[in-house]
Image 1 (tube, helix red, strand yellow):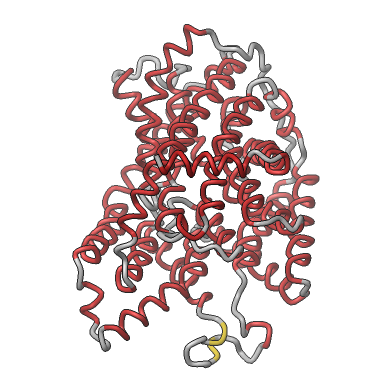
Image 2 (cartoon, rainbow, N blue to C red):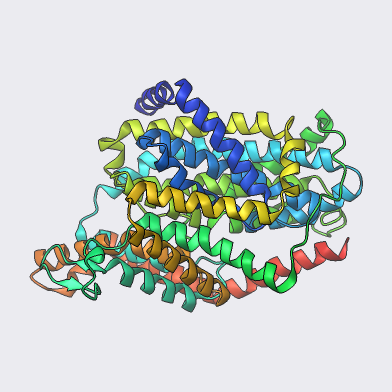
Length: 513
């Protein structure tokens, strides 16, 4: 009953005209970001962070805007997958397999509408899962002491690469790099300068936002400049006519079981730290294929269930990924790592005490997610024709806008040209790391959690008089160590196999063109 009362209070916060306007703006911009191939939800949120702070938004409105962008980008990723056979982001990759054949068969409108409804089903029920599961996780998290928190942060680093990661060693290197960046500044306990090289501007350390905007947004601009100079720009245009946008009731009934099964699978995948929407999408498609079409007679050839399943799965996973972020302070995906940075910048500490200390923030945010889902359903069916026009926007117009938002936003927040130089430095660093296939999210996680990890390690050592065995001194710590080790080792054993299957499925889809 307390949960429903809290949710009611959340709706009273979210249903103001300002917050509704921000949710609509976030949904619209997020869908456009998601529709553009390559940008994806993490980049989309990172690009718009400076905009939120430039407007001087408070904690709740800023989170409503950015989480609406997150959900919108997850919806939008399917548009280019279906029309161009180019996934807007990695989680939308599986949608290409049956979405593009449907479009080639003259059913693009039906595929877009069906995928929009499946996205709504996945995200809506995943948000209910967030409502009921997150408070239960909080009760467990209240048992945590400094040692358990240190192990929990270790678990976050160990599992962030996830089964879909290309290389666990590179993920570990990126996490170590992020922790090293977090060490920069004056040590608050001893007063000793660390890695400042005498530079006064580094005494307070590196700001999360500067690193995020540089690594995600500016590096995207540099990647564009590189491709433009090497190959010249190609203007991509949708190849398909949209056609009818209303799927029949018969088609919806036919796909409903697939949506329900995939929502459950996707949500469970999202709750697991490090699994993310990509794995949720892949598992949902694989399960549905095994259940509905084990001989592959229709899947991969334009089966509507092959569109509904991955879209319900990846959107459910995006809702599930918010559970560990809000309840434990551990991001379940790359985009939630970016959102975690936003919370910390707003002086809001995610974790067990978030539901007690900031109930207005957390329940206002959850209520806004429900509202955003209905807005996205309303936007993505009648207005899908407008979003497909986004695919016509040339990159030479889009990328300067991204760079402008980054520079103006960061300068309005910091008022410092040194911070702008730091942002450019992180942009170049992000470009180099992306060329080397080093993931960027573990770096952000290291910058975010590095200091807290160090503080909790010091507290645990102080309480135990320097006994390292204190880190293994409770059943909770032992369970977390076990999960961390399994989470790090399992992708090495299974990751290559899963990636191979995902690539094989993608190639099979391409062969049907």
